[in-house]
Image (cartoon, rainbow, N blue to C red; front, side, top):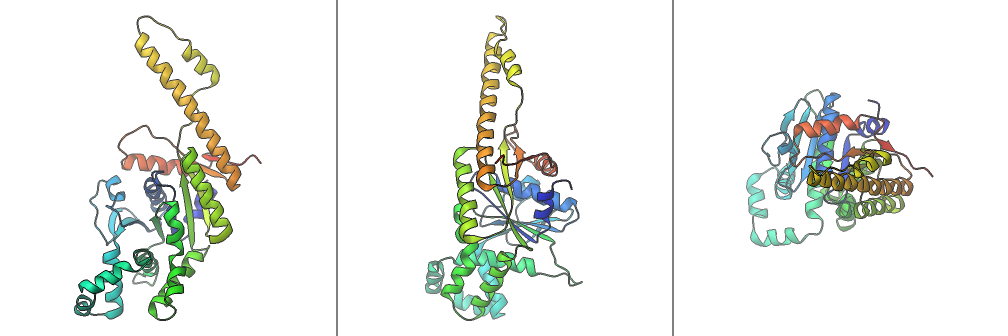
Length: 321
């Protein structure tokens, strides 16, 4: 593996992939999963309270709340808060009947739904449980857990929820469990964040904001900053000029479309590059890049293509300051 940042990222046990909604967190999570599984890491891809999109990339149906195999060394799970609550209570109470008496009660349900941060602590608690599981040899059941985390705005509160729970619940098993989860999140040897963005103004702004907030207050380990859907330089200025000066009365409409398309792609590349430079300067980090794929339906072949690109050290951008 030539990409040292990718190597460092995949050396962790838990990775949270976050970014502004729509930047491609799920695609990046799946690509990272393929890379990890190909280097013999038993990898689990985790989605939170969604319809389960990752299995669709692998032409598989989603199985909620239990790991499903996607390929060699690669599995996926979609965690739903209600199922996580059921599993947690059974783990503590030991009796299904007692759970039904206490937690299927309409009034109790109302109060449970009103508890702030409950869904978040249940889902992140399930992640900790998966992290802690061992096989018969006493080895971790999964070498790596990759979490398709909430969008950056929500991820800030999501990653802080164990601390919030500890402030509310001062004693008891819930406090103890929240403390264990918090220790895992703050362990830079075990846990990292992959920050994903697009080379556009608003996503870049949000990525920079998240990076600076993390630097000043959160202090989580942002091991990789990755720009997705970057439009590369497809031709030089001279080539663009030659394309723009082509003329033919026979193919006038076609040539007009080609000119418009090439100019658009050239302009988008310049804009992408400008935002990429700004991101590198503000974070002072090497930025990894994934190209824009000109396809409507992403499948396993496309995810594998992105995984191969991630392995290449040349797909990066350094700050010039």
